Length: 452
Image (cartoon, rainbow, N blue to C red; front, top):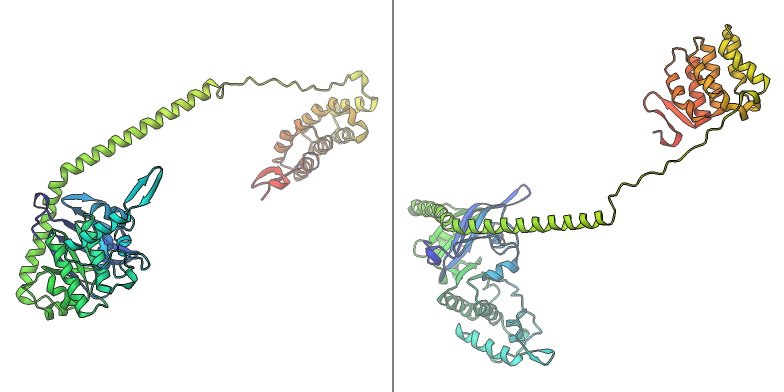
């Protein structure tokens, strides 16, 4: 656990890892480490959190809290592809092998060597077969024929291909998920032997299993997890299989080991400060690179915006277009052309002292027969909306509604606040009849379709 990797740092150091799924904490403040050339048995009951810890390490689930260090450097493992590129290889129970393909094709699955003949690229089967035999032989695995289909192989032989593949492609950490499940005694012995060969080759190995007897034969250290919390790290010579089994099922740490395990956990937590100190220059350099990248992107965006703006300005997109004045002719009516009745009504509206006769004159000016001369008396009728007599104001409002001249809209809206309800009703009716405006205290005057 002290670390035998680069600069004395462990191969993998997971610091204060917490992973939550909604309100459920699958992992809580877990510290975990693996060295090069070390086999660590990761043990726990179903639902203990060991699979979640491995999924965090392999990029399936990002940690909710915590930091992962790989070879002494802080890393963000965002996907299994990133984990594999770093040298973390996982051998699952189903092995991820294609049954109908040959051993060599499975060995180089996704990394097949090719040979080029002119413009064509062909599968280099001879090289694949030769390298497969050599790579498997390096860890003590002998195969009959590399062209043989995986379908014809036993479970232990299939495990050997997956382990050999991880070793050959430069993996630094090998994760074995239940590698001995459903294997015979002989095949189990072979897989355990392959695991030892991977250790001798310098790989760190995480061995996940429910079979304590199998992992006890090969592991150097055991990490036990229960209900998302780490129970402790135990060296092989410190605990028996029975004690491990008891702790997996929720039993306490043996009394003789309580202080040792607590000190070991404290030492592991103190290691986080050392890892952070070692990683500080790297973090600073990464932050500087990130800032430079952000500044370059921002600079490129500014240049792009300025270039687009220049093109638009050059094309006249922002040039102010002088509006062409539109002259609306206002019809004029000569007083000499007005009928005598209109002249009399206008004079009466303006000068008669009797409010009754003024109201009659205002009503007369709204008659249909005088519509062609309405331009001559719109303004006098608007002025009559301010008449002291409420009957005159009401009569003028009704006539303006019939004439429907837009100049009357604002004065009619102001008349809606008149003290006399007959005047207010006349103004509302005029706005509705002449201009299709419907008025309410809450929304003012709007076209009928715009009211809620």
